[in-house]
Length: 105
Image (cartoon, rainbow, N blue to C red; front, side, top):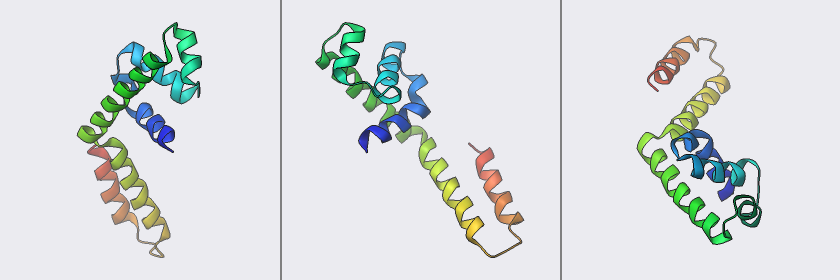
């Protein structure tokens, strides 16, 4: 589960990492490579790969804590689901409010 969350963080904020960190995270999250496979590919130690991943994870979490994009998207999804579940056919007002909140992003 942690790797999935890390992958989501990387999807949102991975471009803010330096190119080396971005490549390691791409290999780890998107390609599902092991530390040993990444180490072999980059000609570094497994410990070196692990340290890059940990530093990158800290940075990605800092970005989410400051910007909160994932949290905002989850809130929007929840609001849309609530609107869909309503038996109210006058959802235009609710959707307008939601649209305005999206525009603020």
